[in-house]
Image (tube, rainbow, N blue to C red; front, side, top):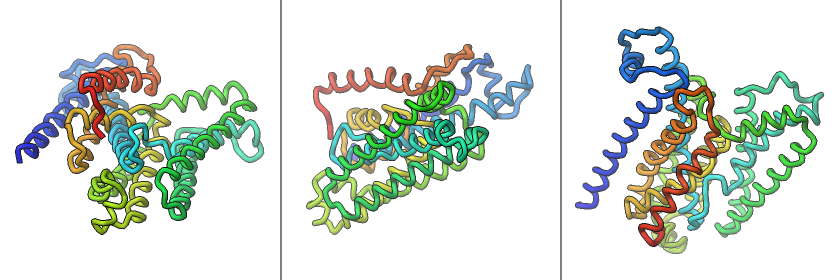
Length: 343
């Protein structure tokens, strides 16, 4: 009972921290807007500059909401993979789903050089990139689900996922070799990741995908807790392992594939946040870990995005670089302080 109250208090504090990070994120940017002006823009108050409301509602709030969804989805999918494979180095992209999304984007961007008669250059835009990346991730997810039906060994599935990632990376390398500099630069820019390119309609679609992934994850909590003690123990509890594995894989595919399609491949969050959460909460119970990683992932992603956008500057740093630069030292410090890894 005492631990339950402590966990609830910690989650409440995390939610308060999330609100603070959200407000800080939308208050800072290339255009300087006073904090009071930001609040007035949100709640419909009077503004010294009418353009501030447009900036806040059409750029900053969608970007902050995208960062929250990306952080939540990647953190949760990382937790699912680490538990399924019982491997602390597993992340949301180990099944090759993100690589499939990258291949879809690469074929659209760089395929115009090799297959100009099939692809039209004018088709390359944010919407078509999201569609191409979604198709790529869906096809890889479909193959992984079919393979998981035939293979009972979870570690073999992990290796197959890594092989899919290697194959798609090799194809992207071949495309990069033959494409022209402009297309290559466009693909590299996409691969940096970004949370600032989504419209409200795209954001709603991403939200729907993330919610589906989260619901599947919540339905799998009992299976996830049992998996920590081994598949034989899980079966002794009456858990259908094949069905549970499908749910976990599909949830991860929705989360990681959807995020990569809309925001590009964003590293580190999915790998690090589950470890941060376990170290701070000192538990392996997924009834605590699932909501905690959702909030932690959102907070860390908001912080990284705030740093990446270089307040009062028109420059925006690659979000991929910031997530690693900010997050890696935190994980190292926690592991050194705790002297052991909870898993």
